[in-house]
Image (cartoon, rainbow, N blue to C red; front, side, top):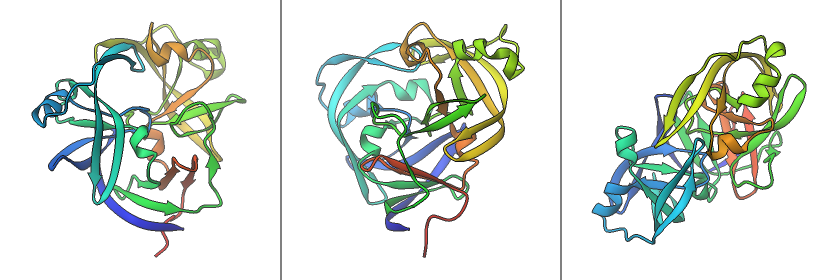
Length: 270
């Protein structure tokens, strides 16, 4: 059961979940990113509304290290639900992706339970109870994680509404299991995140289990980089993007209680 607080339309642009929010009286569009532990705002916009710099610090993307400028507390009003972060960073987002004015990370999203309805193009904020739910699989990270099983191996998987991919896996693990996966690992392509590059190899998983759901013919990629979280994740793990998440009717996430639920049926009871 979901106790409704507010709801807002979302858009799927290039495979990512986008949402409209009001920041300091301005209407902005940005990525609703459960896979990011931090929130960022476009540096040009931050300067235009007078957000003062709190100094530079080291940050990391999935592909490499970056220097980020802290601008402190920023509030995002999404159809009446206000989500706040005390440590927003300013990045040249609009220069990297046209129209991108913020990335709303899980440091802000954890402050209110929500349910994403991919097909209905809605996100609903409130509080919910669902006996089919489960606890986040990984204790040491604020982001939502579920259990993942591929080829009989169990690990954790990050749920990433900011990813346009299916499921991303470490290149090393894929190489070690290439024969059982039925793929060749001799080719790949170079991709870029901000100023950092990483390698990606596309393939298809015949079967995988996410939480309690078994999925077949899942688009996947093997990823590798010299720096960043891709490089740090040398063991088996998964990053689950929207190509997979859209197979569920709804995904309910409660950052306070550290619980989540996938649903093939309606979680919103009138």
